Image 1 (spheres, rainbow, N blue to C red):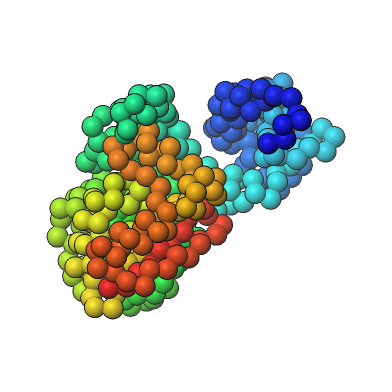
Image 2 (cartoon, rainbow, N blue to C red):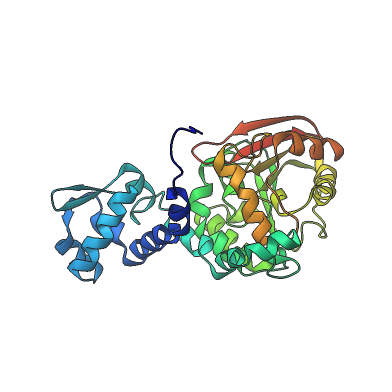
Length: 328
């Protein structure tokens, strides 16, 4: 900090009003504004007609989105940035706007309305288990909405027998199975969520190589002799002792020489960098009883306690996730 500069309230007010940015993006998605622009350079009047809105409303919203960096403006015409064209135009195969259904769900947003209570309690103030309650409906929103964002990091290995734990949308295991025509894929999750995974497996033409296990990963019979067990975005929901208990079950389900692939948001040892994975701890505080974002050293120690060795971390760009892979 430069002590010669006077104090500034900018960060304070920017943070207090950040909800306005979220509201603007949510409105644009609901109006299908990015899709209406597409590859063209459109005026507010043209977009108003395509979005079923007023010209004044579209102009003000589009100007605000330009300020935020979602749109570009030349004269009176708006166009998409490269990122918006890739992730916010519904005609794009990488469209990620559906993630809003999960990230802005009443469950997730409501947890942050009670954040002070969660800090006092040391875990979610919503209920005893938060989002980890059995068959919580928010995971259906996750499975349907977050799938496009998960596809790139799913392509991590090529086993012949795969167990995808907390499969959700199922795209991690599906991507691996698509790389190996002889791979058999087993998806584990709550029964309502597995319906979404099966839809995706059928769409990927994997129905004859896809099966499911419904229930809690801590309780159901996982099976045995897997070449790889995938555990994407799972460990951060629990405290370290629970993670070790789970990883011991995974270890027992693998064949000798098999590996586990854990996908997590992994902060540096200082726990404040990089900002995206480091800040994920706050999400876990608000929505779970004991979850956290774990450093690589912490994950490596959990894996070691469960009997795994040779743990290595592999960044998974363009996402902020990291794959931590260890062998039995």
